[in-house]
Image 1 (cartoon, rainbow over the protein chains, first blue to last red):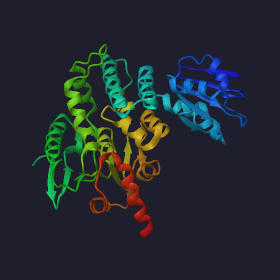
Image 2 (image 1 turned 180 degrees about the vertical axis):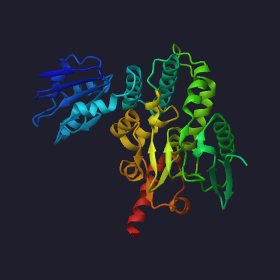
Image 3 (image 1 turned 45 degrees about the vertical axis):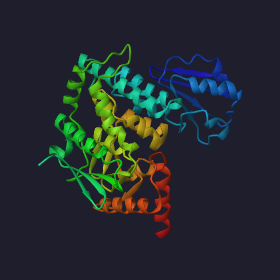
Amino acid sequence: MKIAYSEFVTEISEITALEELLSVKTGSPCLLIVQDDGQLTAGNPEALHEFFAAAPFLTALASENPDPETTGFFDMIIPPQDTQAYAAALFRDKTPMQNREITACFVTARSGTAEDVLTSESRAFYRLVAEKNRGDSLG
Amino acid sequence: MADITLTEENHILTVAMHAPKNNLMTGLFHEEFEEVMEQISRKAGTEIHGLIFCGNGRHFSVGADVAALAERAGTEIYDDASGTLPESHKIQKRHFTFLRDLPFPVISVVTGFCIGSGSEIALNCHYRITEKGARIGQPESTFGILPGLGGIARTIELCGMQKAYELVMTGRLIPAEEAFQIGWADILTEKKQGLQEAFALIQFLHKNIRFQPECYREYIRLYQEKQEAVS
């Protein structure tokens, strides 16, 4: 297994089963990318459902031909090539706080109601306005 | 003349926005918008067949005056420890989100720029009819903030997690065709055909279903299937 950490992304490659993620130190990314070399299987479905449902980051399967057995766990399916460029486009030109606050709203959406997300975006808005008005933001 | 006018004809309400600078959503715009939304909410129990939002000029709305927005929001009291939002924000947001609960179809006819808070007006409607040439987006992240009037919640509902995340995080503006492809827009029309399509949609829904707002996504599929059968 290979794990590459950066400020907002953890990328995992050379795994054969998603179950291996259960013992991985994912760090604190906004986005966890898992590379699928075409051989990826799932594993313990209950444990995986719990892991992915509770993940405090978004999850992306980087796969050319994603298997239905594995795709359902992930928030996103992205092409396996240029994952760093994909991630860079998402996270550039924003403060770390912005990246984390926006991501948190999406994490809320995974299992929350529409009302939960509406509330989450409002609170995040005011926290970001406070940061912006302190002069910490790029905007 | 007011910057936002509400008219009623043949049981159809139309909100036409013709504020300066392509419907720039200033503090004054929001005040007028909220007054008009209050008038609309009083119509909820009456014999209204539908509500249409449109820009009176070339653009739907270029969104909020960001500098004024940040300045105003910075003076409001938000208690992060308790998560208690400013009352003014709750009221303002409710004037957007209540549109989904109205017992008649609410449609935005999107032309030109439909950006930021302008896009959030459209997103909080049941349906979006988008004319070719329109450009849509949530560029708030490029200004240091995020969409706080339903932009995130509603984009996720319509476009799914991935597309919504990409749109909100990048702030990218997308053309009408792409908006239709990803589910942001329900109907794509040629230029100057959007209003006609909105009236046709309202008439179809009034004739064929008893509108329940929680089923709005099911109804548009019926209309789209009918359109496909005809074409």
